[in-house]
Amino acid sequence: MLNNVLSDATAFRESFLSEASPTNADRDYGAVFRVLLFYLWRGCSLSRTSGITGKVNPNAALISLSAYEAILGILQNIRIGYQADATILARSLMERIAIVGYLGENRALIQRYWDGKWTPYKEALAWAKNKSLPNWMILYGALSGVVHSRLAGAAGHVNNQTKIGNVFREVEHQDSSNNVGIPEELLGFVVYSLMALDPLALALIQDNITQPFPTDPSFVAFVGINDAKEYRDFLQNLIKRYEKTPTNAP
Image (cartoon, rainbow, N blue to C red):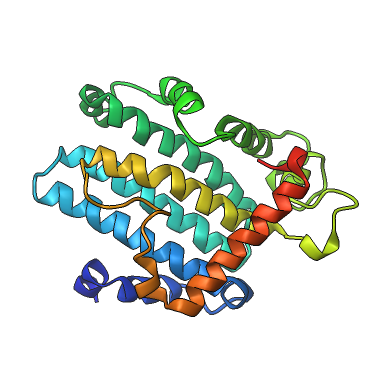
């Protein structure tokens, strides 16, 4: 099984999904999970190979690998309904992605970071503010408010018991035909994060050939036409939702 997981995206997916019994999230968003798992398998595989073959500094390869692996924990928590835990990990993931990007442009610092002689968070977040996806720091600030709240804790926020919870829930008087809930928004965040991570990680491992997510359509061969359409519909619904409520969008 180990070799299959390393070399075969389907085995990787089935191994991941078998770690918990089928859930409502699997039923409702199975296509989204399958698309994301393909790209996470690809990212892990490319990172691992680049380090083993000596194409790049092995520590750079492991930093890239760990960022992709961090997304797996978020997906699993979404699957089993641990929304607060997924949100806390999401905030940490944003920091990790910022570090990947910053180290990709400052390779001389990789060894110092790996040896624990330098803490890059301040510099990496400053870098991300100007170099990452639009609204990166707005979303990071919202997630920080959830993680560090002293009022009700993360679970209270995520379940819409406070104003911060509105970041993850529908605003009042929203068109009910366009509603999405916490699992949808968290999966949307994973898509957003992977869009940020993939090109940065590929640059860190010096892969100039692979097309980054979401410009690479190779996932269609992995999940099939029907799942690909369902995944695109999922994204389109999120886009429409945030177009209608721009003040609430991350």
